[in-house]
Length: 232
Image (cartoon, rainbow, N blue to C red):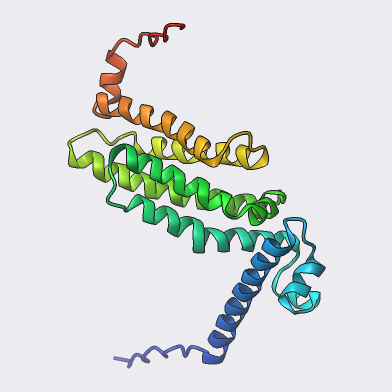
């Protein structure tokens, strides 16, 4: 019987791995520098101004980013990974309950965006497919985190959890779009926006709780129009 040759272990090229990590680290440094440049110079900052603020040549930027669209996408991903998603995760895992939790989740999203107006405008002014995908990915991550929280809390009290995913995506999408509209044309204070969004979300949650999350119970009930408040 012929002897089998033992498989040869593939050696990892340490230098290649270290060089790749160096490129990742350097790219992140440049993105962080870009964020600071946007905060200082505003959302209309040019690539020349970004390079000057960071203290590198524009050639260095183009060594790590294909073009401004690529840099914009990287800025969005960095902001989501280091600020937006961690802030939302903290709110969703807090010990709050009921109305306070509902308002806190909305408050954190609105204020996280509102506290970074120039980076937000810088990103949203770019309509590249890669940027839009980065925005969509961050929304999906937040919506799935919200769905996990809803499913856990509803299951604990014996409610039907079949609708948690569409409810979560509806909530995140609605809050994101309302916040985007407000950032573009702020016709009210951030507290007013937060409270209006909380009013809608809280009343929707109350309706879901009243039927135990059950689509069958919801369908079987009558749905009369609400009683309008009397005029003074």
